[in-house]
Amino acid sequence: MLEGRDLACVRGERTLFSHLNFALDAGELLLVQGANGSGKTSLLRMVCGFLTPEFGDILWRGEKIGKARESYHAEMTYFGHAPAVKEDLTATENLDFACRLAGIPVDSQAVKGALGHLGLGHCLHLPARSLSQGQRRRVALSRLLLTRARLWVLDEPLTALDQAALQLVQSLLGEHLQAGGMALMTTHQAVMIPGVEPRLLPLKA
Amino acid sequence: MLQIVNVVLRRELILAMRRRGDVLTVLFFFVIVASLFPLGVGPDPKLLRLMGGGVVWVSALLAAMLSLGRLFASDYADGTLEQLILTPTPPVVWITGKILAHWLVSGVPLILVAPILGVQFGLSGEALLVLVVSLLLGTPVLSLIGAIGAALTLGLRGGGVLVSLLVLPLYIPVLIFGAGAVDGAMSGLGAEAHLSLLGSILILAFILTPWAVSAALRISIE
Image (tube, rainbow over all chains, first blue to last red; front, side, top):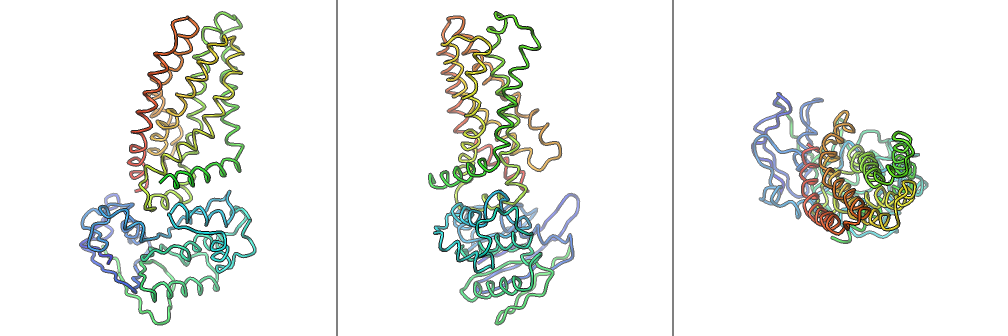
């Protein structure tokens, strides 16, 4: 469903990768691998449409993502380095607005449930300013529970998380893949999801 | 689509309420700049009445500039902007919502305070009314045009200075017609012509600038 054809990425003068091909289908997890600076984040940003590939195309259901923008964006979600959590809003408000802006209808019960599931039940109404780094990332991750996106694009979703949250995210991923979703992800940690054999996508110049 | 504008508006207003300091800073800046002029040029009432409209307008321009940093910078820094771009809604929709919120938070207070400043300069009742109407038509244009500059300078070092260089020249027509309207009312020539020109600039800016902002954001996010 998601396909990259002959992609090349140039940042400044340097070619990060070229002739990169990949395909991702329902129920699959694709792990992008490479050293720091090898272009993992750039690849993910290309898949989101933030970066235009120097060469090659990215296709969603056979159509270029630039052309199918609306339907593509409705079916994907991105979790990046910046967690998109507003310091002045509470955890509940953050999640609520994030969902509403993405066009996902939510009620306060669902929002509370999602935050509770991620272990934030006791700080629902605290401004995000007073949350720790890991807790803010949990607020951002709670979006994954409410979105009905088929494609998850996750850039280092496991950093700054404790053991319990690591387990939780992996089980979330497992459920998502089981339900026919797909995920494109970078991580430097070992990912162990029962019943899922992640495919690897190494990046080389 | 209106629903998205509504959500953006509510979110921005809540954020502004929680950061009231930012709003008040801009307002005080406006008042202080306008109040500095009489100290600089001397207390001659005739002279002050003559330049009152222009001074209030220039101060409004500078205050609007000062508030532009808030428009996209924090959303850019914390990743919200990326998420907004990834929503299925066309960017023009939420950009319009954000600009509208920006005007409500930083433009409307200026309009409310402007008559008081006008009285300081000894403007007549009719001139005060024209001043308020001209600001009502002109300040949204300042937010609209300013948004292009704010979007283009996202993530740049020294973006604050750069944005003034980019945006202030574009503000000139608004200044000319805004201050001209007040002048017209004072001299008895009438302000209608200036006000209708301001109105047409507003309509044009409302239709065109969100598209320019959308393109500028796409460049900045790369």
